Amino acid sequence: MLEITPRELKSWLDTKKDFQLIDIRETYESQIASIGGERIPMNQIVTEKEKIRTDIPVVIYCRSGSRSSSIINFLEKNFKFRNLYNLKGGIVGYAKEIDPALTIY
Image (cartoon, rainbow, N blue to C red; front, side, top):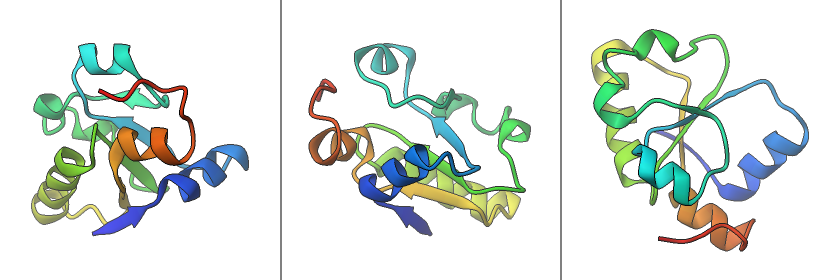
């Protein structure tokens, strides 16, 4: 599985790299803290998989990187995605390394 560090993601955001950012957390979680992107809750990812781009890198994140890792493994195995990156440490890692103003929960 491909991974991206919080610092690499920040660089992609700053340089406006062409990529898709997907938050798979629940609504209440994204209301606590968010780094943006399209929200496709984990339990809807299969039925909404057509929203996931295949022509550019796609970064998928959750709170800690665990759920997003599971989803990426599932999508790669069952739907042959090859462009998915897991945000290492999730939004918690991003908050610790990049944006301490984000609420860690």
